[in-house]
Length: 381
Image (cartoon, rainbow, N blue to C red):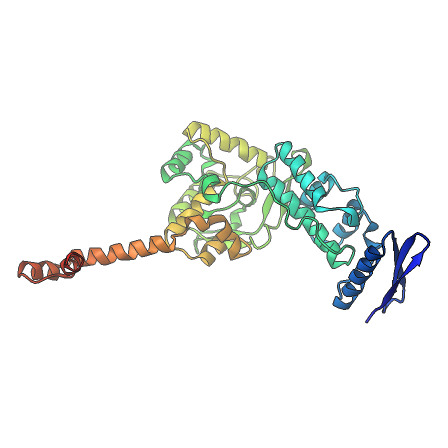
């Protein structure tokens, strides 16, 4: 067990101890003896618990630590950009890690809210910066995470913020789309693909014989109007069973004739850029007089259809390409029938079976009490 001492040095008190493994001496001076003793006790207890952090380690700034740590991470370009944006935007990015307090994080959250950033955007940036602090804790650079327990702006509930078009509205969108964009809309509505996944489809990804669609890549925006082809989001590479109706739409789309390998042709030999898809979607929505939805709303439409048909969480997860079932539940839990819904449905089926029973009616006609009548009499006696 490590030990140390507190001694008087002129007008101050010096607490010192030697690390039992590195044999390095650590010390700090205080004006009051009680503060020196408290600091020493905390350092020795941390050593005993294996949670000791070198007091000098946290002198690196958030920006400097992130610059080194981020180079060791296996990230996509999109993740790297999002993380860098969050760290650069933090109002304490040039502060030493050891000096960053929860109040600094709260001030940053307040500043983002004042600037009008959406609650979801604020949450994402705080979570990204939190991952840096937690990495610093694992590296024993700091002791605690200053983002822990920070209150964030309240987000709308999923059921209030999620826009799901009706079947009639989806039909209007399909009718309003031009002949080359209609299949794109259908793939998002009847197979649940994300915009980037649908844009990256090749002819070979559609297996008409097995009635399947293989999601193997995605399109992401790059600078200068270019597109980049990447693997799907983590856990999103999947095979989606296709309904016959969608296969018919895709078959008609193929018959239109396209050059190259991409199912939905873009500029030259590239798949369509996300900006182009967004423009065509807005044109289609305006023509169909269907407002208040994005192309991603069709993915919600697909998920709601699977849930309404009785598909379990894992089935929906796999169809949508979510990495974990918890992601599916967090997004769509409000669409699944509750215990109350199931109880009401079961009781309705039971009552319907009894009331439609010929035996019950016959018994009542003969002067015998049927089960519903007996139950009613029991409450009135």
